[in-house]
Amino acid sequence: YLIDKLSIKNDLSQEELEVLLTNLTEEDRDYLIDKAYEVRKQYYGNTVFFRGLIEISNICKCDCFYCGIRASNKKASRYRLSKEEILECCYRGYSLGYRTFVFQGGEDSYFSDELLESIIKTLKGKYSDIAITLSLGERGEESFKRLYEAGADRYLLRHETVNEKLYKELHPNMSLDNRKKCLEYLKEIGYQVGSGFLIGLPGLKLTDYAKDLIFLKKLKPHMVGIGPFIPHEDTPLKNENGGTAYDTITLLAIIRLLLPDVLLPATTALGTIDPKGREKGFKAGANVIMPNLSPMECRKKYALYNGKVFLGKESAEEKLKIENSILEAGFQPVLTRGDNVRWKRK
Ligand code: SAM
Image 1 (cartoon, rainbow, N blue to C red):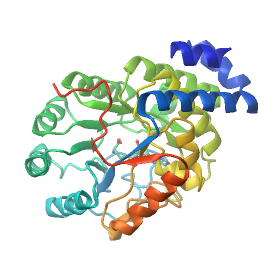
Image 2: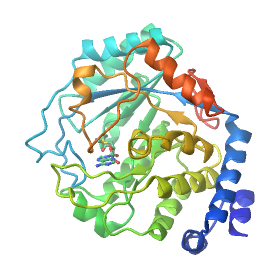
Image 3: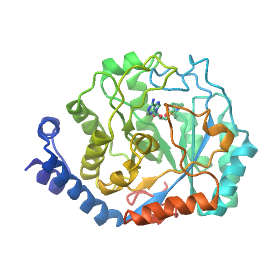
Image 4: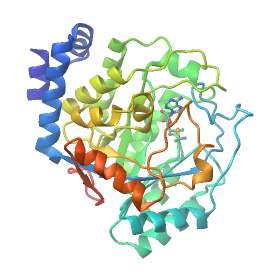
């Protein structure tokens, strides 16, 4: 009954979500996934949008307990890409057909507004059919504005968890309030905004995600990134259990029903803990994949967690492999910008 209500109204209260998550039988879960699949088809057909991910720096001032590139991890071998290297990755990606580039990195003050503006403007001046997504952590309102005006289209900033106490414990010198404020600024400025949370952080039960889901429902982001927490050996959480593919897929399906038009990636972390995780994700409503366009020698260094799989490589052959596996799973790879249907640049 709750699954039908969710798929008809695209809404449930926190209590209802808790009940749904507590009582979900195997059979219910199959039904939930079928419903999510129907909704994804209605809004986006069978398409899977491709985004070229470029990991521009693993230098970070933050010290998030779960993250392999946290400032305190002295074992991490640090790098940052130059403007020329980033442009080179994009040029190569463009020639392979990519039309969205995602710049992700630690909070590295080397990437000033001026430098990012000049990279974004160079790319937007050269190509009229691309989208640029940034995922560079918390910045000031002015900075977000300047980067939007320079041509950035989207910003990914997961809220990670709405559990205040856990947020505090895991993010020294950071605050959930500021994270939320950043998300509000980004929306007001006009970005397509992505948020999301980690699944399987220590102490959380499946029902705890009802609060994260309600937060997302209120925020109405254009994109949602969720993925399992996977422990990294050089972090304080190295001995914890990670999140499961099973829970991640259940939550992907619920998010597809709560926010029917959302762009929803099947993340690298999901593909890392389950080799078929991404395909299962697409069947549960995910519709985005982010192959890696970073230079090969940096991939290992951008190690957020143990055993990260590298999807993409820079070659045409590798891209073809990904496309084929998507086709085999019954979906259609698409390389256009793939904006959220409700977004227009201000
Ligand atoms: N610094 C930016 C930020 O905070 O948004 C972007 C880079 S950060 C490494 C990107 C995402 O990686 C985070 O939002 C977090 O959810 C995820 N992440 C970090 N450590 C992880 C881990 N051990 N397992 C799974 N995901 C992780």
